[in-house]
Length: 406
Image 1 (tube, rainbow, N blue to C red):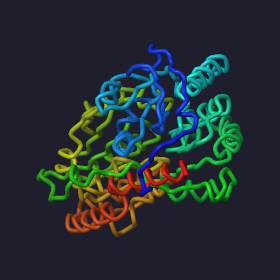
Image 2 (image 1 turned 120 degrees about the vertical axis):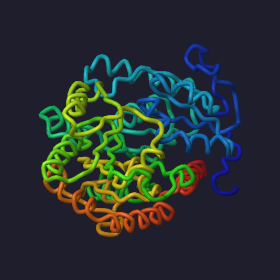
Image 3 (image 1 turned 180 degrees about the vertical axis):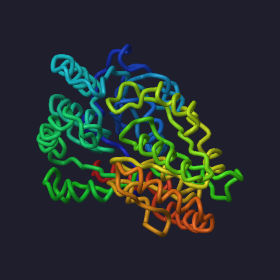
Image 4 (image 1 turned 30 degrees about the vertical axis):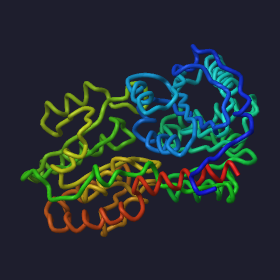
């Protein structure tokens, strides 16, 4: 059996009972010998942005693919890819014990009805609830992917500081049951999880992010004569949006001629959300241009000279992967995830997190040196080709699935 080929499977997925049609929106579950792969992720847009390509690749090699997620604006996109959507209402940041217990039992009900051959959990809450639900439902093959590590691990708020040790204890219990694998997106999270004994070395796997489409994001000289610095992210404080705006203010006061552009939607359900009224205030002030959510990121990168993400913590930031592929110089923070993308003074610059002065200085040095920007961009494109191409990430993921079925 070749790598990535699921073949036939005669375990629990082959004897599943039909589920209620109201639960599975593409129709009821039917008896099948095909291996059944379930993705559990909090938001449909996050699945489409980061994981859909891998799910489609799995479908193409013979898996029957289901997606358990909150169904919102991107639900139809999931269905159009030929994937089975299983809607669930899930509060990403809910801590009410009674509401959360109800959610856990809903997830367990899905697992019992669907009886997946393999489950792939993404982010903290799906890992916790999915792993507990798998125990209740007797599902044995689990892949847990603690992407980004969430608000609890990046925030300095009192709530996050109180919850962090409790979450670490819970992860120690649920993250790595026998026979499971844990996928990390960056080398820092991989090493710290092994060091802290959250996972066993044999079960830890490094797969570097979602990958990037090298055909969609292509290098070239900036199309805009004006220097543009582009930050693409959800509008969250822990993405460094505040530091970016403050750095832009400093540079404008220094007489630096450049345009500073924010691209991304507000996320009101996130505790770290930047209020929309403040984003509009910054725009009215003339410090930044806020473009909101955009689908034309390749075109925006074509117009930019520098990509910036002063984040406090990442899994492996998709926006920087896209900037690499587009051949753009990068300024980002020296934190988990970001430093896997940038080699200092080769394809970009690293600055300390939460330091607007250092960020402004790094941006100014590149704004004043277009030849250095071009050299960084060329090195970044080569790095994207060698390490982060979508085809490479898909192949690594399918090989992991195949290992789990053996």
